[in-house]
Image (cartoon, rainbow, N blue to C red; front, top):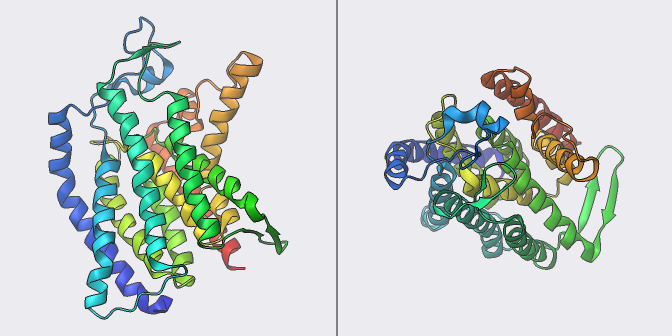
Length: 351
């Protein structure tokens, strides 16, 4: 199936996924309220209110779990798509061994989603632990990063041994680097880094949802160009569900993504970049996520080594809030930056 013949199918999958998700979100939000699966204040249990709570105090109590529904709907539709396509006589073409490709895509999507769900669940229902500012909720950093690295190494092992991916292509200078066995730790780092980068960025209404739709549209063009039907179909379904989520997440948000969605979506975006062989394009297309993550890393480094904060609050979108930018203004300009970076990344991927 060439790219032109896949286009109607891909667009149809996006539309179908959007309508299914849109119908499901209202009762799902009500369910989250009934289950009390809602956001807590960062400074809970403290006499001193954190800067984060000063900026976002009004958002406490909003349901968390939009990512859970997106993961469930996307996974179910994607799983049942190919038996249906086979009965309809639709030719499915894969760049890799078909079943293994499905395992990698869904394994990343669901696996990191489970890690994030555990973190969300413990944050909401677990016993808080004393911290520098108020109470600390959720998995410890050691637990969260440990689980992420184990899963990322497993995925990277499959990419290297089963898919035979071990090259790093650097566009513009036409340089190809053979990483050999070192591709495994490199790929694992990319997966963990993007998983947390998206999680860091998920702090304003509509910010991550819009940026992910932009990134995925760019990578759907790349995947369709590679004639990889499973990957293109997955991205198309995911985009439709994300747009439905974004409708309920724009200011004022009725639901938040949660770590289940943020960790899953960042890791899966990274795996898409790795599978298409466009790591440099991934860094450009997901450039806003990279910048957000870097500001958080710089902030952590400043506290650890300089014993002071570099920014009023990290990541970058919170700093912009702290200096007086309105939330919609930050989100809209981040989307515009994401669009230009996606165009630039697509250009790099096609030269």
